[in-house]
Every structure is written in structure tokens, then in C-alpha cells.
Length: 358
Image 1: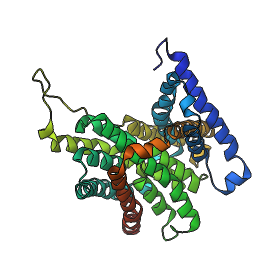
Image 2: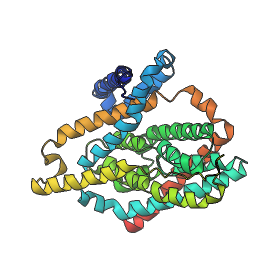
Image 3: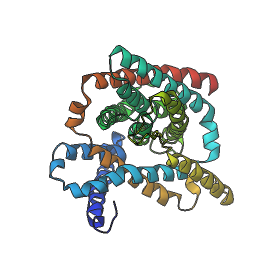
């Protein structure tokens, strides 16, 4: 990506996304945007989607690695830095309900996805990949499951497209439901757990959380991210179980050797937790009453928001009309059925569990 011959082109792609992100920050500061609670993250993905469906075909292909860099490395860096907004005390405050809800959602989504896939007569690989993406962390989970499932590349692309589409839809839907009072039967903690346990991508959770409550360092945005990161960490055990369940399907190569499935663990989730530990220590050493009173916290938070905005903008540039056509009817219907389960089923599960354990 940053090889000597391609370094300049990669930087061009990154700078393009940075320009869109600066525009998103400017627009987010307008009074009308503040009234609508539209954060730079959401405005960034809107700008990216507008670009994807208008001028994207004129983008030099050599710039694409720079955009991919924003959707992967910068996203993970942004999530890790998000840990500077949180402390272990805050994590402990939402830990048990979040873990229980996440475990139910992840398990239920995967099994329901396989069942729905069988009802729709969809091939098992596509059903499993789509279910995994919807259950855990969207495209990252699909890509993590790919070496375990060993499916064809086009099935991976279909699964990614479905979870990106529904995840993006949720990022806009949840703040609307929150502002409209549809979620008024829940406490803010329950809304946060609901958001973190049912949205597809980590960036979507960050975007929706900031749109609902951009002020408090914990609040909805922080609690939702904690819940989501707990859910992301469940990818590791899910992939281990999946590799055992699919062990009989391992293929033998032409030279007679068995192919071993590589398990992809989202290490950035552990980096996120590590930063929370560091931030907790800094708060203790500085005797800061709140997270925002820790030195340089405001600067780090601004940089972090900008990195997440870049990641969201880059994700938007890859969301075009062709994604809908590539998904086809059955995978799209499966993802839609799982989406209904996440939105409605997740609501009642979260309300009950948080009500009992919260």
C-alpha cells in the first residue's frame, strides 16, 4: 500500500477522504445540523455516498488503496483512541447487562440466519457469512469468517454488501427513533446497549451513538461503543466454534495437504480495552474528577472524531447502487429478516435484560 512506487497515489486517496471529512466537520458545525443532531460521522458517510453514486467512476484506481486504508487502519485507530473517552469504572457500570444482551443477540442471530437461509433455500455459505456479519461486527466479521468458511469470493462480497446496507440504514434509523420518542420506554443505558448490540459496524454504532448523545463522555455513545466492543470480542470464540463445526468440510489441496483455516481476531478491540486501562490510570494519577479533565483529552477526542469521520466517509464511497444489485434477492431478504430480528427482537431482549440486571 505504501510501497515506494505507490506511496503518492495512496496518499492522494487519503487526502481526498480528508477533504470530505473537513467538509463534514464544517457542515456539522452549522446550526441546522446541530438541531438535527447530525454528527460529522453521519455527514461524512452521506458525502461519501453522494460521491460514490456520482463521480466515483472518475476516481483513479491507483487512489483506491488510500481509501481502503481509511476504512481499515484509520477505523481501527479511531476505535482504539475512543478508549480515551472511557474508564474502567464506566465499563464496570454497564458490563453485565451488555455481555448478556450481546451473547443472546450473537447466538440468536447466527442460528436464526441459518434457519432463515434454509427456509429461503439459500446456500449455506452465503447464509452463514451474512448471519455472522449481522451478528457480530458487519463487514469485519464477514472478512474474519472468510478463511474459516472458505467460500467463494463473490459470496463474501454479497454478505459484505448486505450488512453494509442495513448497517448504514440503522445508523440513520436509530437516532430518528430516539428523537421521535419510540425508544422512550428505555433508559439511556438501555438505548445504548440496544444500539451497541444490534447495529452492524463499529463505526455505525459510533455514528448513531454520537447522533443521539454527542455531549457526554459515557452516555449513549460511550456505552454503545463499550457494548459493541464486547460484541466484537465475541468474534474470536465464534470463529473457533465455527472452525470446529466446519472441520469436516476442510478441503485437501492438490499436493495432498489439508488447508488450515486461519482465525482472524480483531486485535483493535483489545487495543481499545488497553487504552481504557491507560486512561483509567491517567485519571487516577492526575486526580481528575472526570474523563474530560485529563490533560490533552480534548485534543485526542477531536483527533479521534476526525479519524472516525474519515473512516465513515471512506465507507460511504464504497456504498453505491451496484451494492443492491450485487446482493440479489435471497441474500438481501435474509439480511432483511435478520434486520427485523435485530431491531424488534433486540429491543425487547434489551429492555428485559437491562430491566432485570441493570
